[in-house]
Length: 107
Image 1 (cartoon, rainbow, N blue to C red):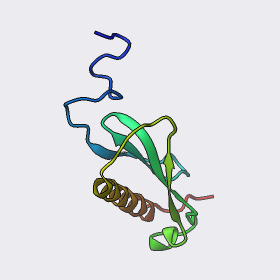
Image 2: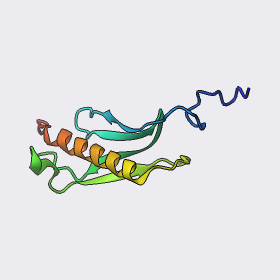
Image 3: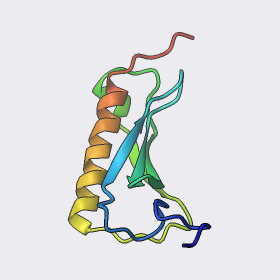
Image 4: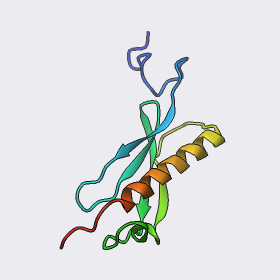
């Protein structure tokens, strides 16, 4: 047995399913939420909103925003295109819904 890479190491191929999913990270005061992209327990990237109108509320808050995907280096993974697109859409919808529900911070 190779103790440097135990069998439960999520970087190793495994017979166990390793679901493609995202984890919701909620903002601290003044920051926007982040959706971490995961394969099993390994984070391989994230989605973020840029260009949020922090003084607006509801749909106006995200009217001019864009979703940015950031991929982390050193992640050698392959994904089913349909699953990946569905995951990215689900994470995008959550980010926008979460941001639209926030109220502007008092100055």
